[in-house]
Length: 419
Image (cartoon, rainbow, N blue to C red; front, top):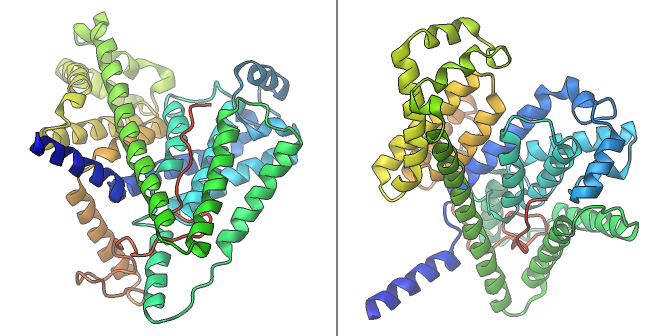
């Protein structure tokens, strides 16, 4: 009994004392923000037809649908061309800044607003990856995804070094972001512009209030206890969100695999043949015909897909087997991106899979990136504590949390649901 109690106590301490998986969180952030940014840039010439006033799904049709399902989108606040361009530009900027890890807590909120606004404006635009991106944009709000491989991490390390030298650090950007976002929220709420269900507006208000509370406790609090409590809450929400992403990925693969098993084409080993001969999914017909001409390749692709998808959730507790299946799934999505012309679906799934990547591998990737940056920018490289030369060599979490509104270490708010 004592051993069980100690195990439970150690597990609770692990979940509350630190934000687990900082490198995996950073890869998830980079993966989804990069996928969204590439999609927006790729479809920039077609944005009017996809989400704007020129689309077949016009503003009035979108209004009728949103009135019935209560989805959140700021594009319904106005049907003007200028407003649409402003929202599209906001989505682009938020995706780019989240990719770089600049004010990741504030940018994760704007990233979610951009994703939901565009996707809910035209719900019929997507290839399956949009559903994953939709959910993950909400989960990212609760993850401390800027602790490594981000501009936030570099700034936190430099400020810690400045404090060690006795310098006084003054931040103006964080409070300005917090005040500006609060002004927008108050204006929209008073004007009754939220025409969606209460979950997303409540989530936005809770995130804004939590960031202000974190800043107030860090700057004005006389005792360290409230700050420690908020840090524990932030860790719990972070770890819980990571667990949700893992469960989400397992459900996606498990349900896809079990539904495939019930299909006759998957049972006889010919299912992979048919998508290769659909004109809509054949950007490289010659390559598709080459692969489809081999019955052995079709059989292996069909049965291999089912086996990997069904087996993956059951291999999570076997590290080596899990890593093998993870590599196979990522390779499969890369092949789908090329053969079937679904790059953004594949990128979204690869970003989801990256939450399972082993930490030693991510450390090696960080080392490779540091050496590449040293070769490209030798003058900016700085010696890291472990001897590697890098401007930002996977910085450790600062001893003193960052209390600025909009910063990565701000405590997250109450979880929200899909809107």
